[in-house]
Length: 184
Image 1 (cartoon, rainbow, N blue to C red):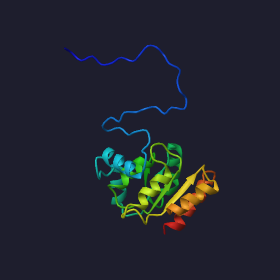
Image 2: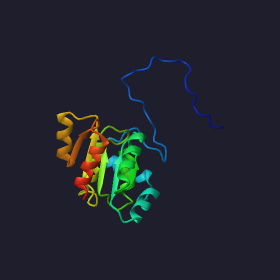
Image 3: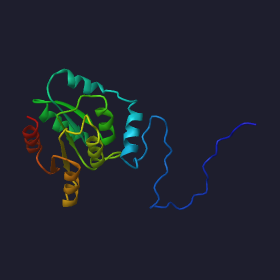
């Protein structure tokens, strides 16, 4: 007797727009969104293979300059910010909070983390909570640069321990000035 995999049904039922898609975790791939901080930490640890340093993080540490971590899903924004910061700092990048958690597990603490709040997998608020609960990263200043800048978002960030909250419309030159004032 041989095993035959079940084939998808050809009869189409109307899609339910309010239902979240069910994803089955596959080894080495992230789930859609962790339910809480403990799950996010565990998933980041598993995906990163434990305390694994990224090549860019290791190279940044070797120069002796202070390091700034940029966490944003917009690759263009990360590149523009990197170009402005590289004259003064080593820069490492993460495309979302999950990747940032993975990276911080294997590097010396950066001098500052600049992050968006709205990101896939792990958002900026969850990232800040994870970092504030990590004894090695808890004192690293965090700056949010985000399109979400309502009073509720700013208050939530300050309660978590974020040092600075700027709207994404702030010119990058001013963002860099603020970073340089915080990271002497």
